[in-house]
Length: 263
Image (cartoon, rainbow, N blue to C red):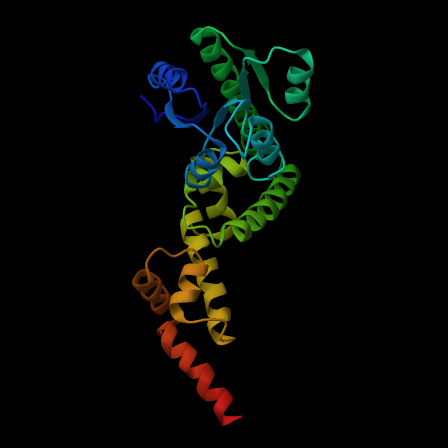
């Protein structure tokens, strides 16, 4: 059985939160939060595939505020959102849908109904990814001109994504693949084809190149540069840096300092 997809349930009523979490946990890895603040912390740390969102949440963030924050963030806007609420006024339902919610369930609802809606939304997302791979990767393999266009587009999007994630400690291959709308295997294949290295190696080299610039320009201590570029371990950063540049980060800082003194 494959890895379970991560979904986030934001519901302040504890009995319902526990009930839904237990019901859905057979199929998905369920993260739960009783308020908007806790929910945002989870979203920062975990790659969430779908959000189930109650409207009536404790101050300061209600469900509509969370929804707007998700849909106004380019990195999170593609996450499907199902609103669950006891508010059955049409204006509330329309407001949620107009602001980017993918579906709206009025309490009380059956757990099976929610399960089917989750499955349908995630299936649509999966189908979109597969179609992109089929259209561009498989279908275009016999069309060199079209394949070249895909490579150019892929490289442009991947370079932009790497720049966005250069300071992220939690960036992973699944994160990169999800944001590129391809599978991990396809990501590996195309990055190796275009850059000659694995995505992980490319991201590491990119971080080290930025580190070299920051150290030469004396933009911070070794520790500050390492943490700024998303390294969890300074010693690991120093090891990787020395392997690439044949000198330690400290020696590069010192060399910069000596050069400025001699001038």
